[in-house]
Amino acid sequence: MSERDRAPVAEKAPPRSRNVLSAVLLTLACLLVPFGALASWAAHGLTDTGRWVRTMAPLAADPDVRGAVADAIGDGVLREAAPGSAPLRGEIGPFVHDAARSFTRTEAYSTAWDAANRTVHDAVLRALRDDGAHGAPVTVDPAPVIARVKQQLSDDHVPFAHRIPVTHTRIPVLPAEDVDRLRKGYHVLDTAALWLPPAAAVLAVAGIAVAACRRRAVTALALGTALGGVLLVLAVAVGRRLTLADLPDDLHRPAAGAVYDALTATLRTVSWLLCVLGLAVAAGAWLTGRYGPRIAARRRARGSAVPVADPVPAPTRARA
Image 1 (cartoon, rainbow, N blue to C red):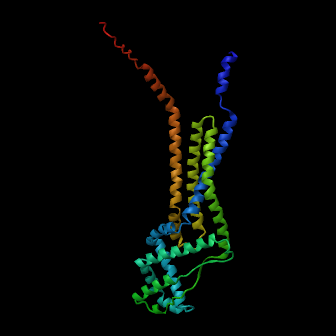
Image 2 (image 1 turned 180 degrees about the horizontal axis):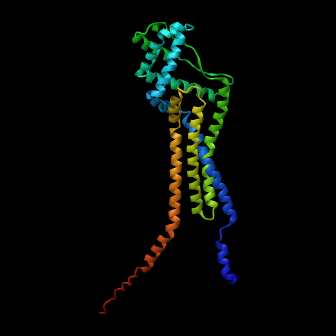
Image 3 (image 1 turned 120 degrees about the vertical axis):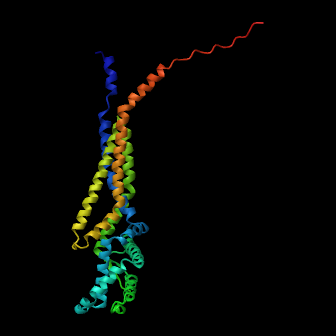
């Protein structure tokens, strides 16, 4: 074979350096996609007070959550009404817990639930964003909730309900050491949510642009995105298992599971969307590469088979 015949084959061969660079860029982009989704969910989804209250609102009707809240309210009321008196607690304990369970089925409980979630979220968010509040725990005032429970107990004619004090106290929500640790994590997630999604997009575009075969690059990026979505789904499932396993109280694990599922619902939806979108783009790229040339060839064949019409002769003038 002559040198003239070999030259075109050498020019059509894809450069190895471009393929390697494209593979590195696409791999980094696929790695950043699930981390960017996780950081955006944590930094924007969990730090919006209105969204938090709307997410937690349906849990007010969850049976497991209502049972856990009723137990907590009943125990708190007994500690305030009969401090250090075990016989008195045993006497009024069943009435208090029954009244607390009844209270969790009222409209006042739903209002108190939303107000308590808003108050706690605002307090925690202010502590996380305040860099100067080092060594200070997060506290909330439970007086409004206690007042509602006291009114419900009085309406149900529970003994000693009028003795429940409604004082403005500060109940710790997060200790100081946890606040400092969470503040550092919050700043890291806030920065990651700002830079990771744009960085993933830039790397993906660059990886496709430098690739010798862009269709294959798009297919690889789509499959990597789908794989990242699958890993994110698995991470949410493993996180749920580990979170519930660390709880000391087995009775309240169903309630904690319901809260975890409500908070991670958006993250799970985004994870499945990444899977579906990645697989759809990969399938489209594969179909285009497999059947696109055939369709183009058929169209060219049809165009060449169309007969060309004879030109219309120019009108001639009649001789006088």
